[in-house]
Amino acid sequence: AAVVQNNLFKKTSLQTSFSGNFLALMGAGTVPTRFTLRGALECFLDFRFETIRRKTSHQLGKVAARAHIVVGLLKALKHVDEVIDIIRKAKDQNNARDKLMDPKNENLGLSEEQANAVLRLQLGQLTRLNKDKLTDEKKTLKGSIDKLQNLMDNDTAVRTSMVEEF
Image (tube, rainbow, N blue to C red):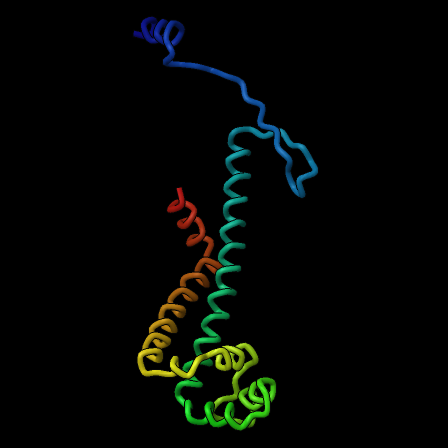
């Protein structure tokens, strides 16, 4: 049986060997390094891990910024009469923004990003339907933030994400 197996390996393509030269730039991209197959795979997996973390960090920042704006819009919708009164009485847009951002205003006290979002709203968007949409979006964003924060905090979740991507 061993003789037959050896002949099959020699005379057919059941066993093929080839040489490979794994040479790549390592570190800051300035040091050429020769890798073994295992070393190349480990380097790639480390790279994917860091890439997922950076991507997650970027997405988390964008989602958190949107959630912040949605909270401000919901606050403005809750006190819509006051917001309309402030905007109507303001001299210009900057004055309205300052009054919306006034920390002494207990009902509003918006941040600059939130105040800008409120000033960009059209009057027709201040409806009950829009409030429901914003509430749903807030819940969705909260779920996304929790998921992304888990990826930032948990190495196992990142590795699971790597497996799912392949």
